Amino acid sequence: MLWVDKHRPTQLKQLSCHPETNARLEALAADPASLPHLLFYGPPGAGKKTRINSLLRSIYGPGAERLRLDKRTFTTPTKRSVDINMISSNYHIEISPGDAGINDRYVVQEVIKEMAANRNISSVSGAAPAPAPAGSSEDGAAANPAAPAGRRPKVDYKVVVLVEVEKLSRQAQAALRRTMEKYSQSCRLILCCNNQSRVIDPVRSRCLGVRVAAPGHDSICSVLRGVARKEGLTLPEELAVDLARSSGRNLRRALLMMESCHVQNRDASGTGLKAGTPVQRADWEVYIQQLAKDVTREQSPQRLLAAREKLYELLINCIPADVILKTLALELMKNLDDSLKHEVVEAAAFYEHRIATGSKDIFHLEAFVAKYMAVYKRYLNEMFA
Image: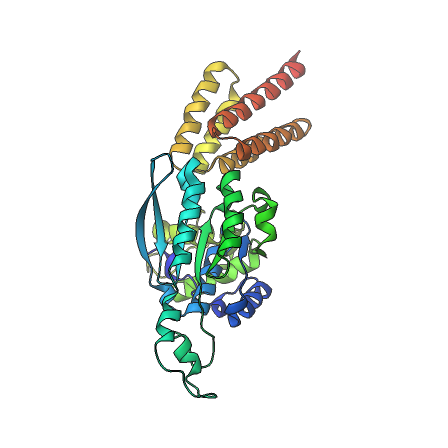
């Protein structure tokens, strides 16, 4: 098991970053009956999913951690079949409806309807026994068998967790708004996204926003030292700082990089990491770095065609288009004259917006590369004219 999964916190009190946000979630978990729909947003690797899972455990107890992987087939009104993988427990279900493509609207509606139609297992089991006398310490346990005595009331609803909700189409988000209102009594929605600006205002206004910011370098170093201590390793301070800076404030990535350094460059004893260990970059980052060097070295139709093949290769390996564009823009600007940087940044922002609103990512990525080639070629011609 990877360290990032092995040492993932399972309770709100175990979370070290963002104590104000953790306290806010603990207050919501203390009164689950009044829990609103939630919208978690923040950059990747900030801890959104970890906080969602910890919140569910605080509400439902250890039963929320007994997960199973299901594959469901949905039939659209046009008789098309859509297969969706989902993670579920007796109390909640987690799906990524954006995987359904243009049929995401039907998937969202059917899943929420099905969850709302089935009563929570805790409310069913809690209704059978005779009520305990008033003031009895067994009141809380009868209401929720997974909860400590007298701690939390009976929870009559289930939770639907929608991840990457910003990838939903406008029609799906509009349908989600109506479904949220209709089944709010028997079902709660927890939405998770990286950028809330891609979620329509009616959906955002019906949710309580929870911003999970990227952790600082000091927080990442603290987590890395804690994980290394649990693994019985010695982590030099210099290497911890290098990992935190190279991760781009992405805690998940920092842990993966530390484990990679341990596997490839551990010392002879196997219980320590060397201070001068080079931080390994991901293969796709090295690939984009080479792409940036190629388009800077030569600007021609043949080079643009070769760049298209590399962009296709990145997309096929599930690298998001916006991540490709951002990383490529940063690599291109490293050795670029200051007079051109504003044009490259403007072009990157323009085509990032096109990627968010369009459907063919390769068109916009290739257009950005062509725009950069044109700008850089013009700069060279003016310099040597």
